[in-house]
Every structure is written in C-alpha cells, then in structure tokens.
Length: 397
Image (cartoon, rainbow, N blue to C red):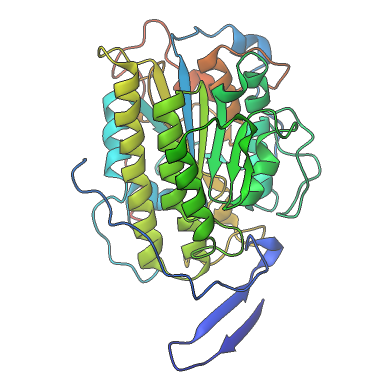
C-alpha cells in the first residue's frame, strides 16, 4: 500500500492506492467540486461453479405477471449496514440505515444475505472489485478474463441484451454514476439507452425530453466528487433515472449508484452512511413512481436491489486481500416476488444468480446457467406470507 500525505492550510488529504485496483480511477480527487448531497428523506418510512439448478429447472418456474423490472445496484455496500446499520469503524450504533428497503421487503418481498444463516450470497471474485462484479451480475456468471477495473467491454450477452432482443430500444435503459458501468451492461453498445458517468451517454434512444436532458447536463457540470474524473454524483443519476422511469416506463431499468463506495474509499464513515440513507430514500421514490405507473392497486413492477461487492470494516478497502469483500446481499419486492422477508437461502448463492431472477420475472428465455436464487425470490403460484423459514438471530455485529 502506498500512502502519500500532503498537508496544506486545511485538513490533511490522504490518498490511498488500494490493492487490486480497488479505486475506480487513478485521477486525483476533485477537491474543488463542492459536495452536493441532499439530506435523507424522513417522510418515508471461494469461486465455485454456477448454481446447481439447471436452465430447464429455472425455465419451468411459474412465470409471474410482471410488466417491468427496476434493478438498483448500490456500489460497495457491506451487508452489515444493509441489515443493521452498525459495524462501521468509528460510527456509533444507531437505527437501521435502510428503513424504506426493509419496510418494502416486509410488505411484499424477500431479502437474503444477512446474519445467522448457514448460506449467504457472494460475488465469485477472486478480486472483489466493481467491474468484474458487475459483469458477473449482468452476465449471470463470473467473467472468464476480467479481474480488475481496467477490462474492456464485456463479450458475454447480458440479461439486458436478452431483454432488448424482444423489446424496443427505449424499453431497456441504464443510468449509472460510474462511467465504466457501461462496459458491463451490454456486449452491443448503442443498442439501448445507456447513461453512465457524467458524459458517457448513448443519446440515440433518449428522445427529446428537455427535462431529462437538463438533468444529464447538470450531472455533467458537476462531475467528480465524491468520485473522480467522469463520475456523476448520485443525486443527478437518481433524477435522470426517475424521470426516464416516469415518462418512458421501460421494461427493464437499471440504476447504478456509487457515492457510498467512494466515500468509503475516502475513509469517511459519516458520509458513507448518509449516502446509504439517501439511496434508501431513492428506493422509496422508485416504489412510489411504479405504484403510480401500475395504478389500480395491482402491482406489475418488481424492484430488485443488490451490490457488486462488500468491503472491509474500516471501509477504505475491498479486493482479493479483504475476504469480507466477497459477501453481498439481494433484496426484491413488488410484483412476482415471494413474500418472505429476511430469509435464509437453502444453498449458497452467487451474485450472478441475480440475472436469472430478472429473466424469470420478465419471462426471457436464454442459453444461460440456471439460478437457485429464482426459487428463493420469485413467487410460486401459491405463494403466501410466512411460507419460508425466517432468518434466525445472528451474533452481535
């Protein structure tokens, strides 16, 4: 680890070069850019083969009446913060950081990856950094060659490519804060809407929405902090994604938020926790938006929330040298989702299993590995509350 310290008239700035390309850019921090985060909403509540379930078993699962899926990724969240809100070095224990997520899961969903279970959910690694994690997430399997954040465009057909094959270009869309996210979501760039980072955008399919374009322009004007370089702060990514959801109503919307990960790398626990709370408020905003879209009280949208990797206790680091980085979580609620609340999986689960859930929800056929996560998350025809074993109490975190 190389640590450079520069002391000026203000506080000292510590720039850490992390193991295994943990930091998403080698550019210096954009210190001149002001922090632009809103206060959290208070008005709403080791590498293994793919899952044993084969494709035939996955495709035979009951297909729910789901019209759209919103997949939200929260970069670099530890499962401890998602489930309890405690465990960060230097941070006092307090209320859960994601009350909206837990409320919505309790009403109509499932969450896996918490404490006290024999099996958890893990990224396949081996390096536990973002780009390989996202390639596994969207491709449904661990990438064969990508091991760091310098990889090129994925060569694997992703679940977004599969949905696009039976949809209009505008019916699949990606809005992410990190620009390299675009390399993981599709093997065929320009085939659907991708707005990744402050300036990386496939505008061919965006249409003429002046409000949406204003959100994108504002994001480009504030590139940088809390990330580096072409990073677009989450607040601008969220505004653009919500606008697209409300106006276009795509079949598959993917939203990638990253402020928490970058605050973690900066060694700022308070801002890391605040970013998680703001992401939780965004999840509630998305739920309100799809409730209005679905109308008449009949939910036809499923919302899935997960992360690309975890991190170690001090928050600064993740990667091959930090085993806690492997552990992730998966939450889902809404149309077609089993109502199980916090649940223990029947077998070990992988991050790549999430792609199978999206396929099952949208009834997309693909030549891809089966996913045991489908049986854990997607509701069978006779699903009823309380039909799954609940999570047992875990040790103090």
